[in-house]
Length: 362
Ligand code: FE
Image 1 (cartoon, rainbow, N blue to C red):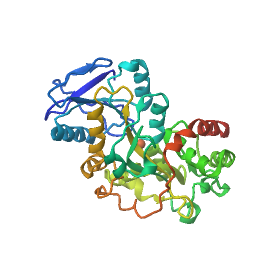
Image 2 (cartoon, rainbow, N blue to C red):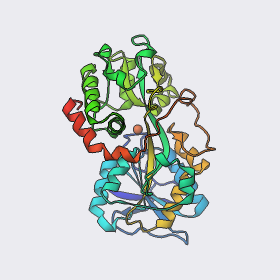
Image 3 (spheres, rainbow, N blue to C red):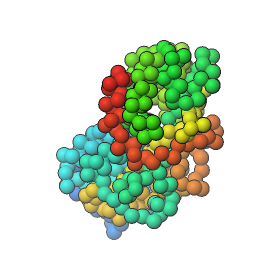
Image 4 (cartoon, rainbow, N blue to C red):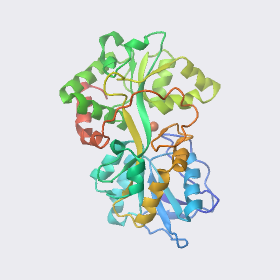
C-alpha cells in the first residue's frame, strides 16, 4: 500500500483497499501509472491533478472520482489505506507530502489528522452553505460529507423495544449477559463516548461504560457487522452498530437478509439528546500542492450529485439539502438526531479511551 495510483481518463486505475470497510479492491489496471509517495505527481493538462488520501474502501468511490475528473478535467490520484496508516504515511512524508485531500470515516479520525498538523483551514462559501455547522470543523479544517448513526440492533424475541430506547439502557442490569460491542479502540465507540462525556461528564460516562461491560455477552470483538451477526445467531440480544452495516445486510444476499429479519433497530435517546451522529469527513492537507483543486473536489462532494455518489452504495445519509436518500434507508428516517458539535468528539478522545480502559471495555 505504498503507492499512489492514478485514475486516468475513462479507464479507472486500481484503488487498493484494506477492505476494512467495504468491498474488496478490483484488479489492477496495468495502465495505471504509479506515483511513489513523496514524489510530486505528474501534472496532466492545464487543470492539473488532486491527490486524495482516503480511508474509505468502496468500489463506488472510483465512479465518484471518475465523475469529478470528467466534469473538471482535474486528474484524481488516490491512496487508500486505513486512517492510522495514512496518518503514519503523512508523518513520514512531512512537508513533502503530496496529499491534497484527506478523507476518513469519522470526525474523530479527522481530528487526529488535524491534531497532528496535517490539515489546513480553508474558506468556502459553498461548503459552509451546504453543510450544517455542527457537522464541520469550526475553522474549516474538515467538513462532514455524509452522516451515519450509531444505533442499537436487538432481538425482539429476547428484549422488547422499550428496554432499548437509550444508550443508558445498555448499562441496565436487566440486560446482563445480553450485550455485544466491538473494541473500544474503534473510533466509532470513541466518538460515541466523546458525545456521552460531553453530555453527562466523565464520571457518569465511566459509570455507563462499567455498566455496559458488566452486561457483555462476550469479550469485545469483531466489526459492526459481526455484532449484528451475533444478535442474529442468538449470542447476544443487543448490540451497538452504525446503521449502514445493518442496511447493507438488509439489502444483501438472501443469507445476509435473513440476519436482519431476526433483528430490529432502535434509534436511541429520542426523548433526550437524540441519536449519535457521525460523519465521513474530508479536509484539505496542510501542505496541499493543489489547494484550489482540493477545494473544488470538496465542493463537488457537497453537491447533490457528489452526495449521491458518496452514499448510493455505502448507505450513508446525505448531509446536503436536496440530495436523494439512497435506496434501502426507509427504516432509517424520521427520528431525532443529536446535534452535538462533531468538533468536540476529538477533544474528548483521549479521555474516552482512558475511561474505556479503566472500565475494562477492551
Ligand atoms: Fe464503517
